[in-house]
Length: 572
Image 1 (cartoon, rainbow, N blue to C red):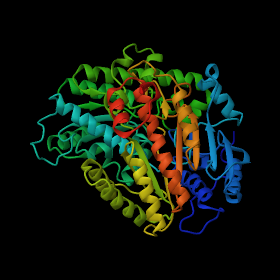
Image 2 (cartoon, rainbow, N blue to C red):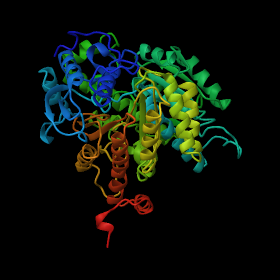
Image 3 (cartoon, rainbow, N blue to C red):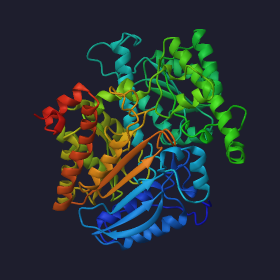
Image 4 (spheres, one colour):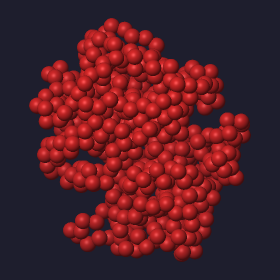
């Protein structure tokens, strides 16, 4: 498929002037364009937003048709988008979504990378990742806050187990990773959040990436403190930061499959001590992981020339990297898979111990999911950063007791540079999201912000995904691969007033390994929007509660009882 035809810089409109007939269609129009803004997207000319191959639309012709359609749609019409291509507009009703999207979905026996790539090459399908094909990617900040939460949980676990080096004195304001050193790989659209997430928790971080331009880009946006091409110098800098208990991150240019084993050797020799080891390379798609022995310049030519051979080489390199990670764990480090399916690829590459370290969700995040806690993100359609400052302040006033939330919002305001339209994210639970949505709608109604606010989330949420190597790994009842839940999630959100709803396959971990759903709504200050937001932002996280009740988690049962979530099988 030819993705470059018609390539041009895309930037979403700002301000209060509509190009569509209402904010309910203006919002998806601006958010689609925002996904492809050169400030936001990895390779906008190829329509790739993040994750190596995650696209916003299938082709430039499809982009033109979608934007043209959104500009002319009525308030009771719904646009259908099949893997990035607009295929129809039907009359529905005002409560129905304005856009319904399905991306990358394949029947079970055909859900393989070779079959997907065949269809993609024929121009019949695209890979939507999670928020690329659902038009709610907000740059690296989108994953930053979840990464911040994860690394905070890692630090708290180390402290609870007495493995934290010289824990801070009681009453200290030091973050949970102070005095620790984290090693990780991959500094792209998702992995690029890791160094800042570590340093916001006051840890030191060494991040490895084959592509120096990615590291430079993250340093330019202050997600990364500095870039180093000399390994000895990089180690010296992060070791000094660890010893001084200060947050500092260094990006090292190298191949993780080669660098991780070398750092393991030095770790064992006592030259440097890593406390935490993880990875967020684009391992979910072997063609997006550079094997040893191939240069960055040769990468895409080699992958296109022989996808199967390249895949085998990539899996062999992943096996080497994962072997080093397992042996770091043997040597006492905290090691986890950060949701990119590298363990399964390494196992396929011949390394039998690949699954000896856990995924991050069962290790740190599942207790949050039981409460319906998950990513809540919003975007100022005005394009004015001041609107985000107003919402930050309003959220802090709405939840005055949540000091962890306040710390995040303050850090984000200080350290996070907006990419594209100004946006914010925080994690909120069942009951909290609906309150926040109604608050934002009121801010719009009263003119305290200059234009409507888009409210969405990642597909990585408590009740919206089936992904046995990530979000639903090691479920208490063994229901890891049951994919009815994201389908029910998409259906209930469609029925609850969302402005657009998406159902995708393969995001995060690759084709054949996940199904997940997303929803986005618009706080436009109207009474109708308030009604929709209250139902949608109650029912969507409610899916997380009932999912975990069904799997037998006691905390989820407590939350359902405390907050009035009806569970028919638990009623007398």
